[in-house]
Image 1 (cartoon, rainbow, N blue to C red):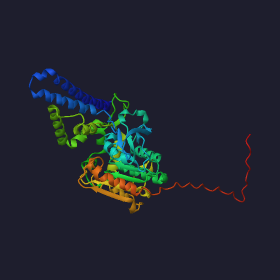
Image 2: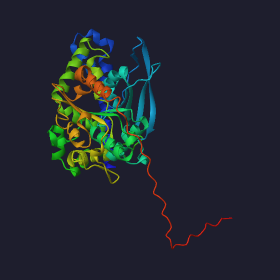
Image 3: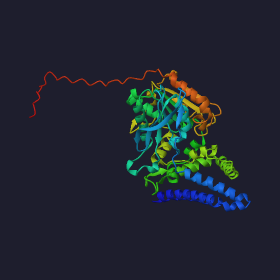
Image 4: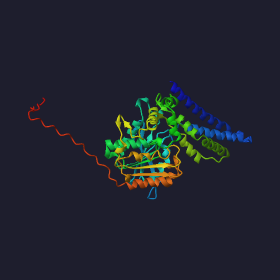
Length: 440
């Protein structure tokens, strides 16, 4: 009950701030204040609009907003989002472009589950759609998942990826962004041993913590300083009474958002001050850069407690992926078993989340892969966001990733080998063979 009270207290604070913003906006917008030539009322109204919008966005799942794309035939084609596989904790969705011929490139974009929705990759998807058939992992908000659905940790996450890859077939090209990079690598290794014919054709890992110890960041330092007991006590709560997942243990999205903002408090404060001033002057707009960025940035989702804690304990503290010691349901996953999947890593030189060196460690772990199927790229001057959604991605990284996919497009996937049946044991010479009796 204590955890639920804390969770509901955070939601109450958020709701109160949204109400205060709405009240200030409404009160300061009355026409009568136009008779008073004082900028205070315009500033109050602007503060109210920005505050109301910001706190309301924290509990709203953003829309993908990709309505149509231009194609080679010179026409704009409508984009329909279809659910291919729907599971309790995440879905596989397909961006179906109406009236377009089947594309040679098929891409599975593995979105991070680290506080934000998969829509964080909106611009990444939009940039890939004209040149490829795109599928995305759409993770669900833990607060909306009933306790009866059970647990969801990093092993379950990995098995979800295995199922998605198997469904899409061996001609799929997987791109994993940030947090899922180590688990996507593990899922590929799992398939390499369990069902080689279902492995993807290529695997591109972008800014992921394959080996967090390869280069220190504020994220990895925090993981070392805090014990698992302290972490569970500080950040884990039970979902409150307002949502379907009432009682589920989670790492709340609002708490994650507070940590995100605290990392760059000065930058965010300046951005909101500038926005309020612009609104008071009448120069702000609904779809300006500030609103487009913060509508997505402020929209956060809860993660299951077991997923968050097992990620910290096994990926960051235990270094199970980095040391090739990861296991699923007690079965060891050997990354060295990957022998037929082309692997590329992408890093940004200014990445302060997954610093250079953390992601490229994947190539070292792929001991069974020939050098001709390995590639790496370090983008000069690029930060964490820029390597998958910013100008660095659009201008430099995206073309390189598509070239990498095309380079290995003709690689022959492994064929499934039928399991040989054990030969029947011949009866011994001195043994009596009893004929079968018919059963009436």
